Image (tube, rainbow, N blue to C red; front, side, top):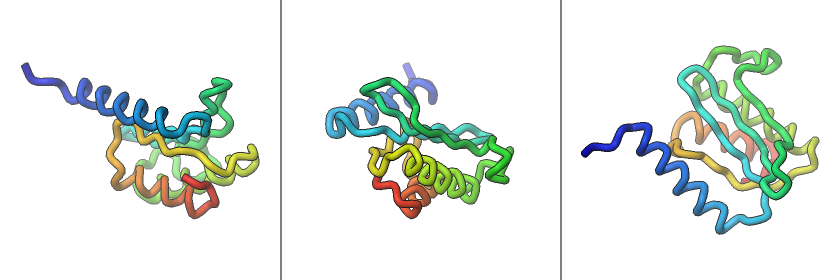
Length: 119
């Protein structure tokens, strides 16, 4: 019986997240979600269970509303790096979820690194 794309995605997401949790316990998590129309990212403290900062392509201030391309992802990555600095975070581990580290996800990570966030 063939697995659906959604089932394979969920398995990959949990595999990635569980491996990262073992290695990076105690660090903040930079979690990415990509849909067909938008991209969003959150800086999460799993110990306390709170989100310290977030950024999304839905925000009008970023000027990329409704766009989901590499340029929009780069702007979101720069925004999360700036907001993480304001929240006092300088280091986090990158949780790509079930998404491949390529294209938009990679552009977001590189922009966050250039913004001063250690991933």
